[in-house]
Length: 383
Ligand SMILES: Cc1ncc(COP(=O)(O)O)c(C=O)c1O
Image 1 (cartoon, protein in one colour):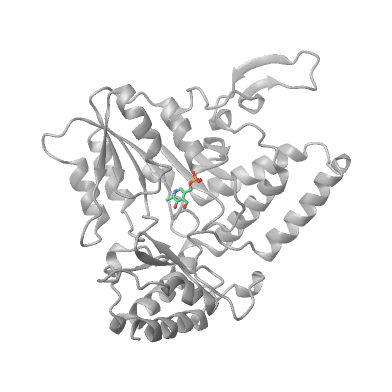
Image 2: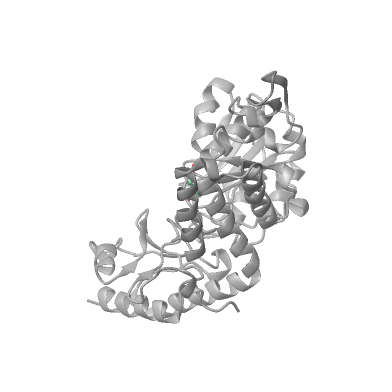
């Protein structure tokens, strides 16, 4: 099992930060690189030739490695919503078809389809949050619903952001293929911690940002595009997506055909060297630690919390239905007022999400953090 990586972060001992699913802290290495990068922007004449390309390709390769993709199949984008908008521009959802989304999924994989549903004549079907926490069965039942209109696409998170429910993407992917439907995975709470192998799974799109589980900054995200969709028109029309539109040429629009791979979907102004390099570092660290070791550690921490709160009245989903790194506590009479704020006052940071308490440890958390949370919860919930 991976040992606690707390000393790689600027995290005082009295801080018990259990909120990676909102935003992770940055590793020391990333902070240092970010400071140096800001300095470089202050003195742009120090940028070596070829620097831009090196930075883009480093980040692209780091993202690709986490999902076993080729770098050429990954685009540099700014947010999950940007990736979903790109996918929506590429796909022609047939009139009368269905697009599946999850109840209370994060808005980014949902809203784009809601906006397009009426003008394009397809239905957005919402899979209800299952009482028993078994999202996979609920999604499979929706995919296979007898008599339903044809299914064009599932646009879903693979780990539900609010309740930490884990969706078995292998089973869902296979069921979608059987129906001839496409699969867009919002892998925000998945990539880096859990494995995702695009070569085996063959999804249509996988999207993830860097500011949560892969320990990066805001504003950087990645879009895997299956090769069968790489001949479409990008969201933005910008030089990076074209073969040779270059200010340094004698002829500016020397070759304005699109690039032949997913690089054509790169966002405009991707030369954000500061955060692009910072994003690469977090992803590289996650790959070095490896999913198996990270999962073991986070599973151990969330398991201890689940065991520790057993007699407090808080409700926890069955272990087989929840992700190893997110624990969501329900409260039969609703979350007690002031609980989250009270914990924060003690230096314990968790998130309120749709009436539940979301606890999301990362590699910097240790047994001491968990014991502190359990003790504080036991005291406050039994009061
Ligand atoms: C499941 C999920 N998807 C996406 C996002 C972020 O989306 P965007 O990058 O479009 O802001 C979040 C942020 O909380 C999330 O939890």
